[in-house]
Amino acid sequence: MASLTFQNLSLPSSLPIQTIKTPSSSSFSILSKSSQSQFYGLTLSYSSSLSIPSSTSLKTSISAKVNKGQVPPAFTLKDQDGKNVSLSKFKGKPVVVYFYPADETPGCTKQACAFRDSYEKFKKAGAQVVGISGDDPSSHKEFAKKYRLPFTLLSDEGNKVRKDWGVPADLFGALPGRQTYVLDKNGVVQLIYNNQFQPEKHIDETLKLLQSL
Image (cartoon, rainbow, N blue to C red; front, side, top):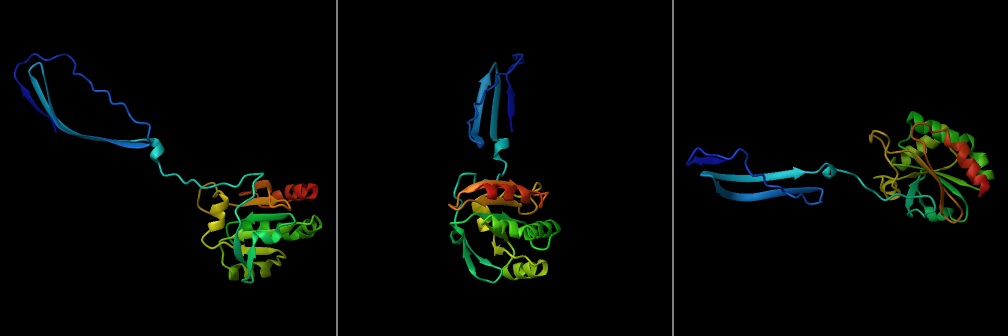
């Protein structure tokens, strides 16, 4: 609130402007106590509280991301039979680890059946196939039985492994993402394939890479 006291009617045509240099941090506040200025007979008293947010202060989600050429974080999860399975179990042979949103959804069912239909080719290439979602082991068991899935499904309840690997969400952030990783026999990532909207398309490229390892 400003209070003005006029002692004469002679005022300058413009008032001095204070320039505030903003810090480089993403969000800051400028606070000042009540103060008083006098010029040309004009007494100005004011109190200010100014907060200037930056667009970079918007909430963001940053997580670690597994890249090609890296060894991804280890994990131990329960399979569809309730048994603990560790990533290290597959060392010494190539492994295809694919993250998918949920059992029984149309896209996930197509993807699982595509792996099933090509499973013999994966075996011939010496590779294991492992599917991971946040569903519990009993859901995985029903899913595997219904569609005769011959490979391992792991339960990442709470999506901890998904977060550790930095698997991106879908385009709208509404569902966990769908992403495939191909690891060589030393556990090093050789291929990352995001197949959110075309769950069957990556099978051929995955097999092509496995056959070259």
